[in-house]
Image 1 (cartoon, one colour):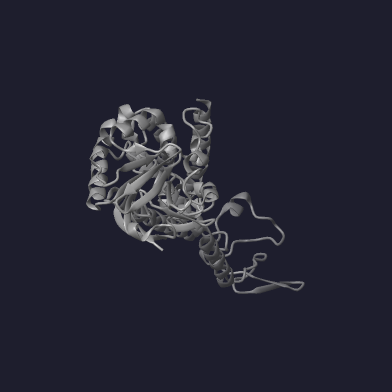
Image 2: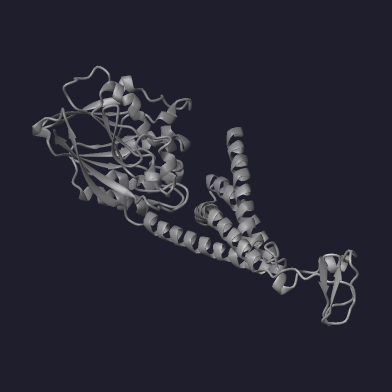
Length: 440
């Protein structure tokens, strides 16, 4: 409980600072004091509270918060990124305008003692000119408080006295950032809620006998059945996989975001998965947030074999393949499941046979490579889900999307068929992959 409260407090602090920045750029800089600024300020406060409220509320079953909260989270992110990127051109533009204003400003007019209009009075080396519009002035007399507070004349506005121009510039940046963020999020929602893309990839394995050439594994991860995606989502994925007519089905973690009591009905279509040599499942990190023991039993009841640090021989009429699976790396320390045990899954096997490992996170390949794993199938990354998060994922995972290699072990990472958090995918379409094994 303390960990959850700490997470929420940290999230509230971070989102509060982000919303303070957004309020400055989108409200304070673009409005004059008055009603519209007050409305914008209240809106910013409500939106700042919406993010932690959504995180806590959806856990408590208030799923109606999910759509507005998570969509705003995506909009907030893109507004932040765009406005930060615009800071540099905005600064350059202000400096250029300030320089041009300074160059265009007329020479100051020095006003001397009262004299006849149009005459010049010389005092030492200083010439003072008066006109009919000039009031009496005394050399050396400081301006009054009222005179000092008056804005400069239109022709004498200096680089720091052009509020209209600054307001116009701020509004232009805000409109650009708002429209761009809305466009990206709108397109991303359409992509995330649409059908997963069906990809085919051929992966050569040195140990695969020619008799098994072409063995096909339908691979899917990160289905994320939850508050925003229910039974229809599962049915669509099952139908897409069945159309592939695969030899094996591999579901590599993060199936759900909720308990069996909440989502058991939504997961039920998994019982209809078809494959010649069976369907298999390994846990992802989200299973450990959702009651992993109940889900392992439920998935097994639905007909998927759950591989928990174990290996099976997949015997076909053309040969034998080792299929192994390990618990997710996040299982360590949970106290509810055994941590990932690569020795239990991979040791003491026939080294002449190829082995395919199912492991939710690509980072598992560093351990898998020590056991000469031929191919690891993973998910977890969502392909980044929202650009530019794919760049951050690279800091944690060796492969973000597609086929890569870690210490001699080939690693294929699928983008996942669902999403987590914002119902948005930008630059990483949902995906189901048909992995075709080829003999080298």
